[in-house]
Length: 255
Image (cartoon, rainbow, N blue to C red; front, side, top):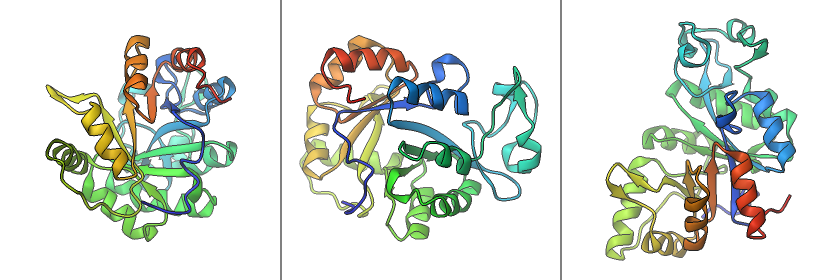
C-alpha cells in the first residue's frame, strides 16, 4: 500500500459527498461542494473530463445534454466555451484547479471519466500541490494504469472494474492478490447487477491487504447502518444530510 499519503489519515468511517451531494440537483458545482463542506464533509467525490484545449474540468457526463439541455461534448469544447455555461444563473462546469484551490483542507476522490482527462488531471493535481489529498479513480483499469505511470505511483488510487473482480474472486477463494503500491481503497457498489460484492468475506480480505472499502452510492439510512455494522471504511451518498445524520447517531461524525 502507498506510504506517506495523507488521503486516508482522517478518523473513519469516512463520509463522502457524492458529486458534492447530487440529490440537491446541482451536482459537481462549487455550490454543491460548498454546501457539503458547510455540513462538515471533508471528503468529496467528483468527476473529471479534459477539454479540447487540455483543461481538467469537473463534470460527470461526456456531454452537456443531461445537465444543461444543450448539445456538446466536453472533449470537443474549449474551456472558454464551458466557462460561460450556466443553469439558473450558476456556472455548472468548474475547473478542477479552481475546486482544489477553493477547499485546500478537503480531500477529493477524483473519478477520471475519459482518456482525455488523464494528463490534464495529473498536471492540475501537481500544479495545485494537492497530491496528498486526492485519490484518482476510474472504472477503466487501463486508464488507472496510465494515471499510475504518469504519477510514478506517488498518488493514491482505487481499483478499476477488473481489479475489483480480481479482489472479489481472491476473497471467495482465500487467495493472495498483488496490487499496485498506490492502491489504497476498493470503491465498489453493494452489487454489480445480481452479483454481490460487499460482504464480510470481501471486507475481511480487503482489510488483510491493507485496503479500505468505500461503498457507493448509498442513500437509504437502513442500508447505511447495515454497511457500517458490516465494517465498511466509507460510504458515498447523494443525500449528504441523511448520511451525516446516520453518522451522528453512531458517534462517527468528526466535523
